[in-house]
Image 1 (cartoon, rainbow, N blue to C red):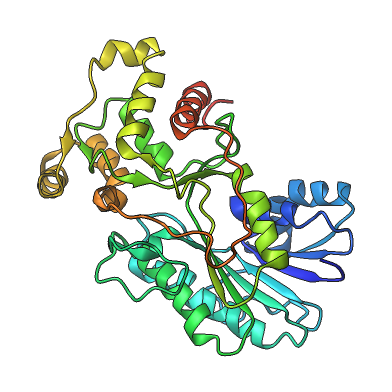
Image 2 (spheres, rainbow, N blue to C red):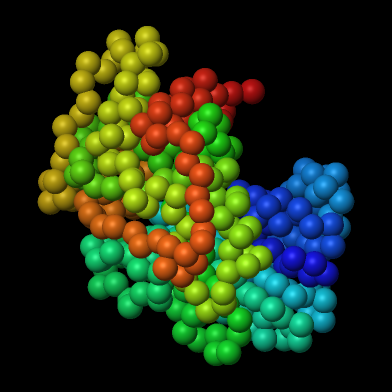
Length: 364
């Protein structure tokens, strides 16, 4: 890739920053880092470390800011310079409210498409998406635009499906790609966690004895990845894959861990901690969906604030833990290769030990 100017939205986020570094191998590439921020000063503070890293690699980077809910969030973008767009900006919390999910993830994507139409040198517009666009549909997740699922577990999933629909079905003749990602649970195979997400918060509940039951089915597959495992495939896609493709970027698609495997590995790792051993003799029982919904209703009405807060961590995505489905890979880009260096059970154990050692990111 030479002589390109690539706009990356959400560049201060975990995946946005990784994409920027992955694309920084060519010194002829110029990066425009767009972040959600109220001011240029705040935007510069959020991208300072990334920009310093890019400079060391000999890549020019410019930082811009805005808000996807504004009428013109990209007012400062030089449309004549942009050759490629990687849209990674989104609100990713499973518990996001409907209006915010639509305003940021769906309407914000439409604003990116509007920008793309105004870029005369555009070669590609790429959406970072998620496997959760499949909602609660148990059919295999194909590398194609999916029909709208009948049900979703939460508003985040629905809004990301809407974003895919905007890019793939409503973008007309724009040169687009959609990259569907699994859940990123660690930075690397050592289990280092840089960004805490719903998986880590659920493990925190287990560690502190705030998970009275385990929602889901033991055999439910979990599609997980480290940031390191995604870097090369994403770079290959953005630099050489065909256009008008939906690509499932899932390293463990052929051999995913099960929910039971992950829970067992976490329990074993936590058992190395005296505090956990003293409190937890055995794992909580598995809970079917009907029982879990009844428990959710009782928790909301009768439990303490602490228990309610704990329950709200897992409730927005709990329904997914009952969905058994496979993920298709290798059809949209047959030559795409993944490097998985550690089993998911070992990775889970390392993540758990890292979380305990750092107190889930609160250690000084």
